[in-house]
Length: 398
Ligand SMILES: Cc1ncc(COP(=O)(O)O)c(C=O)c1O
Image 1 (cartoon, rainbow, N blue to C red):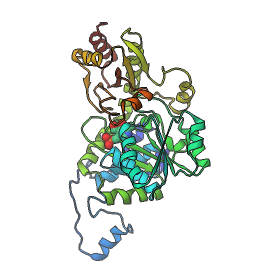
Image 2 (cartoon, protein in one colour):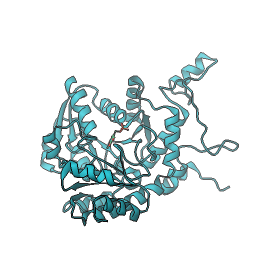
Image 3 (cartoon, rainbow, N blue to C red):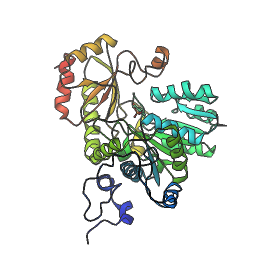
Image 4 (tube, protein in one colour):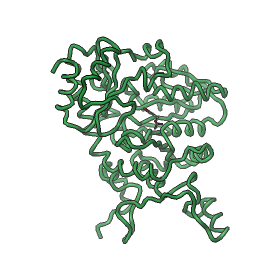
């Protein structure tokens, strides 16, 4: 019999596990997962209900608690991240909030990378700080600043590769410093994906994703996921259930369908991003390119260690001439569209000053390197030459 034994899964490569993970149809079942579009299950016996509700027996009873399609997605992503458990959420933001609440259930100091996604910063500043949480925004590339921020904190929050300027955080070093102080580390691995980096293996406590981006991969749903060990995931799951941040079955079904091709998409997007970044760097209209492999000294050693198979499909560049120049480029682009998300199969651009980082003041944006000419690029799976030609003609260099 040539069937894969679940016990052997650890020895299969990620490209194989991403295709098969999360669900193993029994003989006679459909190869594609059936969509269980239901809010509630029925029971004949109070004892049976109690067994499922208390976890003594597997099963589902109410859609805010669990669902078969959601459970398949959770298992597939946990497997890819090398986690023992995962919980899916209604969005990446719900994943971040519920993880922080599970790790810091009372107001405590939280350390966050100052280069974090703007809405993550806004969540901490606007929703948790007023409740008494102390938010310590730190440049995580500055080891002394991190050391100074750790005492008394309960969690460090950062991205593997930052949005929008694609700075690579040394997750291994950050986790080592944090764990020496007994501080948990939550890594947002949305940009890198588990194909390129698995932060749990570098010492992170939990990994979160906006599944809306690469994991689902087709710009057609909003979802999130948290991966960690069982006890922490149980605690996060309780927050997800109580806050109503649960994922619906159809989103989970679509996300798992998208996830199956992750290993085809990400290497291509990674190669395309580098090709585009190198091509754009040669144009006189481009002042600076922010790509992990091109962004100057310091990052290369970290990239080689943490992202040996590629740095992902995201990068940014600064256009000479600021916002009017960006609008003029947008007016002339034929293939590439402006869309305030990323990770889909189509190449898109975004404008961080108005989108991902609009909650930051102009001064805060500038201090983080986000200027009026900064354009974020999400490389898709098209032919790189077509993409480069589109940018060249749009910038008048074609
Ligand atoms: C790095 C990063 N983390 C988290 C999120 C939030 O994800 P979602 O939009 O699925 O809530 C985003 C969204 O853009 C993001 O870029």
